[in-house]
Image (cartoon, rainbow, N blue to C red; front, side):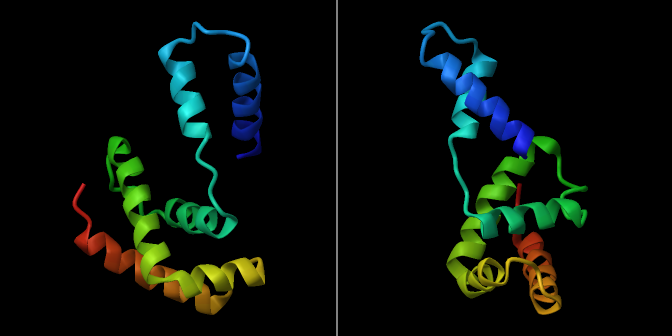
Length: 110
């Protein structure tokens, strides 16, 4: 993530001085300008690292990420707060995240 952030900042600085940007550079700038709270990053990375995204087509992952984050923020805000406060995923938070992801995947339609 640090590498991606560094690349984004480099391209963003370059873009200030150039008006002709190719499509890939424009996409990098658009995607990179979506800051996310640490606890939200943890939830999204958790889903990927635990293999829950393995069965999804790569083209559907962004849609999943957006829908999952919206769900977690609106329905499980207390869990995100606990992750932010503790600075880590406790055993209790881990169990809750597993339950949330499993239930969300059942109803998710890509």
